[in-house]
Image (cartoon, rainbow, N blue to C red):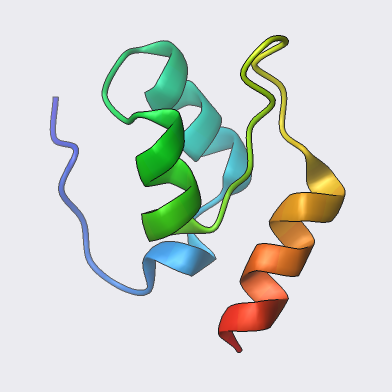
Length: 59
């Protein structure tokens, strides 16, 4: 399995980031910092509003 990639990490599909988390390939902290994806740590679901805010703040 190849987890490397190219392009802007903030443009990565949110569902793919969530999949990487559930597979143990990416931590919640890394998802937020590197990919701009906020995940609820209890339910392991995407926090859509927080994700939109993270991605918008980056420009």
